[in-house]
Image (tube, rainbow, N blue to C red; front, side, top):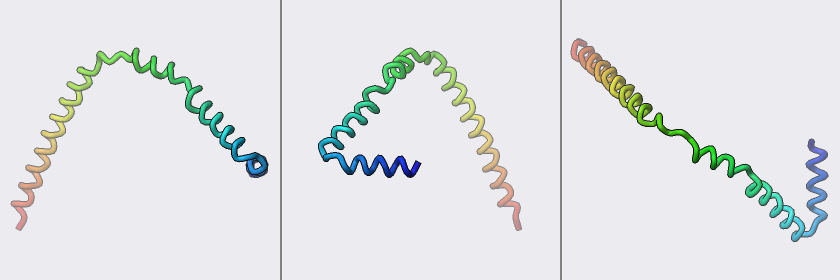
Length: 85
């Protein structure tokens, strides 16, 4: 692994700056433009979001339940603080 990295650096060192820039441009092009983004975009556009209202209602119920529990805990803590000598 280290030997191949050293060999790569020595090869890049022997190239001209223009060749290194060209090589980097090719690598960036391959990384950016050859990604399967169309498939991912299609997956996002065909995503079925009809369950969002049901999920929002479930989150509201959870929030209300948590608020009730927190109110109970706060009231209980308040009672304990008042009963301390």
